[in-house]
Image (tube, rainbow, N blue to C red; front, top):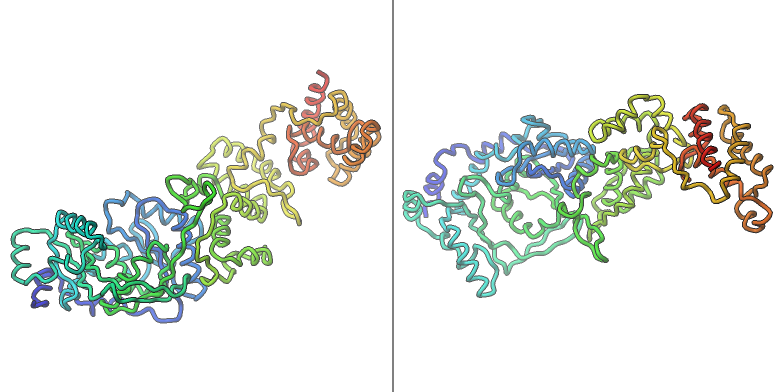
Length: 547
């Protein structure tokens, strides 16, 4: 076979050589690691994808390197309109901003583009032509019918399915046969002429899982499809080389493809990047564990976190707890530091896969919210509500100072309350400040006549100027003078001697003002409501207690 003639026959329009592209895209230089996130523009950014992108970003950041975004759009059947924008918005919302690559619609930055694979067709064909010239690739005219027939036969013989060994019908076609097939209009793909044997073993050091050994690839895989578009395997090898990728961090479903990829790098004459395979994020289900599913689990899509109003930083915080086992300890020791200061390491990643626990995530989110000021919460909440909850948006923006005063209650201090995990919680959290329609179902069971007496007497001593300590002291003194025990323990010990406990009085007042038993500091709530509104609510409860 005259491989040079075959190469010119298949790629007459390709005039550049791989050496030309090596000059266009020289090695990056420096010691920093170069990582990438390379999704398909399907419009759905999975939390697992965000997880991989975050880790890739941190690996590059820790080494002073570069993290770039490449769009792998060679599978046009799965692509959706504006899918790229959805990916970019999803990454930026959670602080995983690329240093270079695709940054927006028709917008790129960096010296190694185009960063969209569909714009790199000539580059792939140049390297494919070189493989043909070296006798490492050949045209295959086997259609779908033949592929189905050999698959059926292989299954019958109980051997591996695929195009290899004795099944490679087009591997040794002569140049004349190739010319005849092309002249007759037969469609073809370009296949790799694999020099591998399944009897041989390869090994590589995975950045997370350690040493992995596998059979060598002996499949003559497709490198260019019939339309001249490359397969993922071939495109990623060419791109990772030319873009200077040093570390590829991806899901462990790609481990089975590692022999193909390492073989491609070798045959193309490239140095392979270091592979680190992430175990999938799991979820408990029916006593077992399974992968997070975009069909079954709303939290699998990053849009879920936007729609619910989770602070973007809280999502990052939680993903870091899944990524590195020592993150929670670091956060406890460094509550005020930004998570970018955390010394991230692949060595601390789970080999078996992290478990996504929505309850734990909510706890992380609540802790995150405690670090925000009232003004910050107001800004975040109104920004979210403007998109997802217009009635709440109107309430908050109608009187910003009132809303900020609500958010300032028990904010700061050593033990701030943790009522808010996400901005969608604010509607319920703040409801009684705006719309007060009490049912009094939460009133303590001390009798309406006692509630009437307590609230009536309390009105006489109430002063909106009282701070918490003085406010509670007056309340306690009044309760004791009216025959209430100083604590529930004392009341339970001698129930016939008291009408109830001081806590019952406090609960009656809390329900009168908020219709809830569990709220932030009641003194602060009454101050935010103002004297007129607080007394109006107490009067309403007094009227209820008369009936």
